Image (cartoon, rainbow, N blue to C red):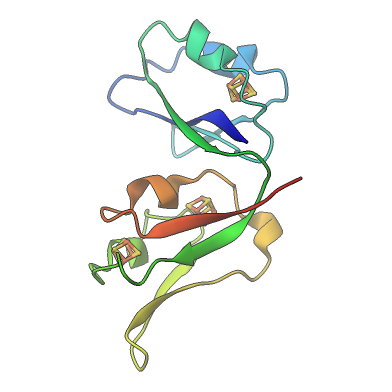
Length: 136
Ligand code: SF4
Ligand code: SF4
Ligand code: SF4
């Protein structure tokens, strides 16, 4: 089963009116570095936020339904561009380059602290960051 998720709020279009935050029944929209993000694990996919946004700032994607339990790196797609290791890519800097193995490692320690924002998934230029979804 697939479900629609508003994964991020475009900073160029967002006017910071907060309507999306007020409209969200499970309070899945949170605020970081003056921008709003959606907690994938709380979002119910009702798309009320998309409806109320008068600026078309909310991007919607389709993903499998279920709980987000982490991320894997698709080594076929990863070009080792190292974008994911830069500050600001992930709020928690969970992506590292392992020199010996020449690959990207996702740090899954204390995963409960992950914001489930899917920012990493959305921002990998090569679509190499793959969400692990536990079907519920
Ligand atoms: S789709 Fe619904 S539940 Fe998800 S962030 Fe928007 S308002 Fe909240
Ligand atoms: S941003 Fe994507 S392609 Fe670039 S190193 Fe990270 S996982 Fe690989
Ligand atoms: S969803 Fe991705 S970008 Fe967001 S906090 Fe978790 S690992 Fe970092």
